[in-house]
Image (cartoon, rainbow, N blue to C red; front, side, top):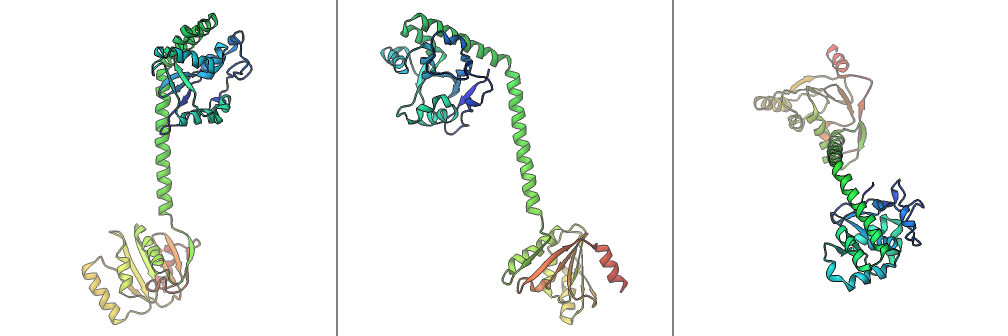
Length: 323
């Protein structure tokens, strides 16, 4: 038997009771013309819901089963209200009523009702037969009691199955969370393969190159004809045990002095003379980036960068050392 659930606003919403593959009756729904004879066709278990962690039935469903108006049923209860404490019968909140209307088509007329329906627990339904005082009420109450008992047996007999399903659902949610976290980290660590930085994007361009330097695992090679101490500082952001080499055309006395002072305090950066390159290249491990501006001037004017796919760092280094 399917079990429908209504929760309050801070809990999960009621399951859509109209999506059940099993009809409530052989006519697919409980209609207002239900008579005592038609009750034999009703699958009462489909009318039992769980609200506030308690199995209950809605007053409208009960009235149809008993063959009386909902108003008549509730009036009979009010005349004997001392027999119906809160644990036997309670009124839904506005939020619970809205969820009931949203998820159960047979309660759509409640949408414009100014009052919320009442629901009855198993004990309350048992008490109903004593206040309605008819053989029909007695017969229907017996059938409803049987349905509640069958529901409890079903839940008890399948408790381990439900627990396993709950565990599977929990693990699935946890797995989905971890997968989402992995994708978020992948997205965060993914470097663009090409793009343009415009004048004024000084920090954005600087941050982009810093991220490239930080992700290096083995080596960094910079080919740039215009280098100063700012470039040395940027390359110091590399991880430990990552080598750094600069190929440049101009090694002035000041630059050589900066290099010597730098290398006495920080992991050494090797600087070599090379005057065969016009463009700038940044080699990060096995990736070759073509960069349209000197590293020291990033963001001052428009420049583009591209991750080159048709050449490896080894090929480029071999061409440099062969000169």
